[in-house]
Length: 463
Ligand SMILES: [Zn+2]
Image (cartoon, rainbow, N blue to C red; front, top):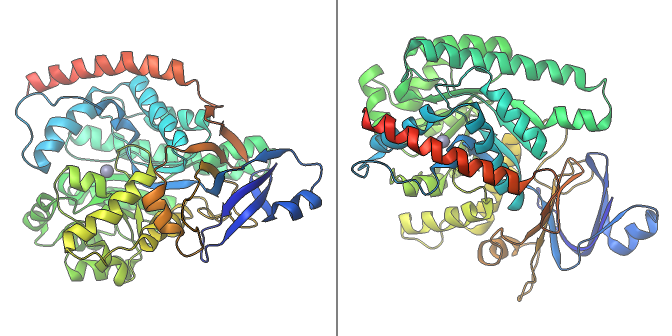
């Protein structure tokens, strides 16, 4: 497939804008790029996808999300409004997760995946919880992801908050699913392109909720299991001050110190949030090469504080960008990241658009490369995964290699995504979804969401 006549934005280490550019996609990777005239002459027999009037750019990556949160949209939390983060967890999220059965998990994931494709998010790192439907829950999500055709890294969040039995079940689910995926990876080379592509979409890590709901004993058990499997962790870290206070009470240490001592941190571990850190903890994150994921919309919504991302980046900590279950439109998350630090520091020089794009593309690509190491992601380059989006954008000011980040912040909001390609396969073309039946999914999701809301009211009434 030859995508031509668009404005090519390569991103990657050195962003290049190629007006009237073209990209050649072969199987699941990018085989060539350059000017449309050159490539049309070089590959006269290719099927052509006309990108006139559009930016052609890499698919967006979301480095921390919760597919299970979709049914919370518009839901009034029963009782008094939560006044702090622990109350938000108890009254909203820990009631929602308990109310989910397997069909809810499937449709919650599917509606997120529709939203992701519609906004050009082609790779998502999910963190799942459903204490009344643990065994096999990751298979249900994997099936939805395969149907959608995007990339996703899945895990189950182990926690002690629902008792020892469910903590064990959470560990079991991670171990079972990781072994299954690792088995797939071995089989992949034997298979044809399409089958390999599907198997390659899904990957996995070991999920943990957060320090404040995990005992040393449970964490030690997880470390042993993950070590045997050669994987890292995906965990919420110091999202709220309550996590820090709990860690000091339990261990005499702050959250990052406690997790480091127990062997949770490391180059394959994703630490979401990191809002309440001191300098020593930032040094530990840097020293262990732990990957941090910033979720500005969620942090503002929960009023937990502003992560000192400029300080972390300044110290060389790798910080990416996630949505923590907000809409799967990463353009909006970039806008939030651009704005919040300026306000928090009362300094308009803080967090330039170039830094925001670096987090969203290069840093997120580095995090994603832990799970899809075969080819580069987050850039349009020869040999990279063919994860490409076409977005309607007619700039009214000059568009250059260096000012492109400011065009994203002030001109592109994700609603203009027109065409989405993952691993060389078209998932949306001209605004029409090709892999998912949006009407059926939304209709069924609406029925299920009503039932989930009723169950949450019952759970709330008994608490
Ligand atoms: Zn989260």
